[in-house]
Amino acid sequence: MRTILRILVIGAIVIVMPVLVFIGLYSLGYRIYQFPGHSMQPTIRDSENFVGRLSTSYRKRIERFDIAIYQSNRLNPQIYAKRVIGLSGERVIIAGDSIAIDGAPIALPQALDRTGLKSKRCDVTVPKDAIFILGDYTSDSVDSRWTGPIWKDDIIGYVVFKK
Image (tube, rainbow, N blue to C red; front, side):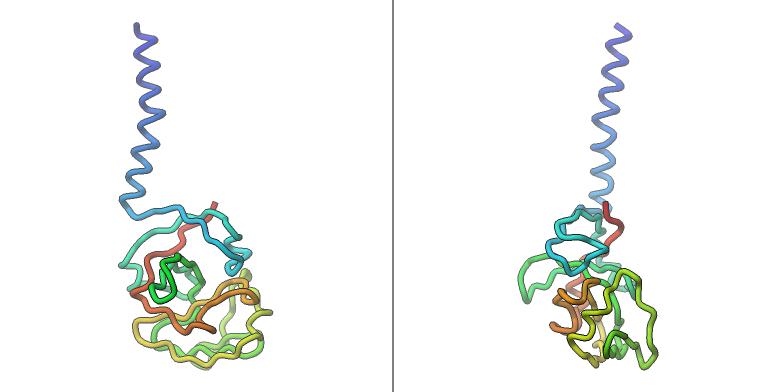
């Protein structure tokens, strides 16, 4: 009888604990996403899963080089993830394969491919309550160079880590 009770307790722990952890993380806003496309390679590959956290308070603490998750209602309900380059009020200049913020060149993350930067010159002052984003694979990314800055109201969270 004790052996059966132990098996039931261990079985309950093995089944119930992961479910409780999942419910806890889900209630805290963690979600698993699958990002279509190549625009964030090599950081996030086509159809690769990653964990994001839904957080409207994140809009108040966005930092340069974060990977923001956003949903543009103007285009369609698709979810996107791109790297934050320019913050509200900053002047972003893309010329050649370099980026300057308010006139000072910035060191770019290694994952960001510079070759595609040459395809579109930009000189944009990011409006208040907006950010300037780029895909890491700049040769194949529809980002702020083409669509303009993203409004903070469209940001739904940020990438925590990828599998």
